[in-house]
Image 1 (spheres, rainbow, N blue to C red):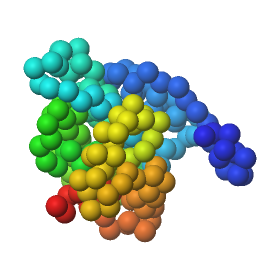
Image 2 (image 1 turned 60 degrees about the vertical axis):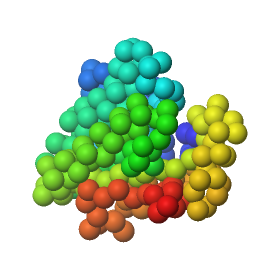
Image 3 (image 1 turned 90 degrees about the vertical axis):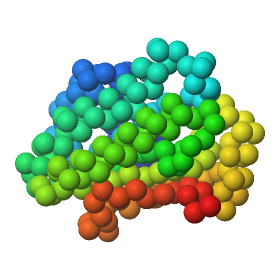
Length: 202
């Protein structure tokens, strides 16, 4: 991806990180600041989505999901949002999921972690919005990516429950993120933007 951006005349760098706790989140944020100086946009996109029954969930599985999906975004925001607030501008876009909005068999662990992120988004909007920092959520539906390839036919079956009837392409989710990160969304604070093929409507 970095090479593709550079080939098109853009500027891009890649920073590897094993995101699992406060220390790793703050370290990534500080390295990013050291590389580019001011960070104006944070997209909390890293996440994991194991599906399975409650009775089969182990404590290590539970902790890993909440560490990556909730704890890491929390401390990335804790590290970067105060700087944005001091400058009087900045944008944070958190990535949730449509299954944070309704109960789905086998998706309680994943969905609940993202539901926590939605509530944090609203809290951060209240905390940092008055200081010029906008915080919002994109809530995707089934999306065909390298990460979801392991779902096989289950992805298409899940997408079939939506009015769109098919999985999203990554660009369709990215366009929504770009919108919320841009000045075109300058009056949008604490919002959840569903990009789920209409699933929330049915």
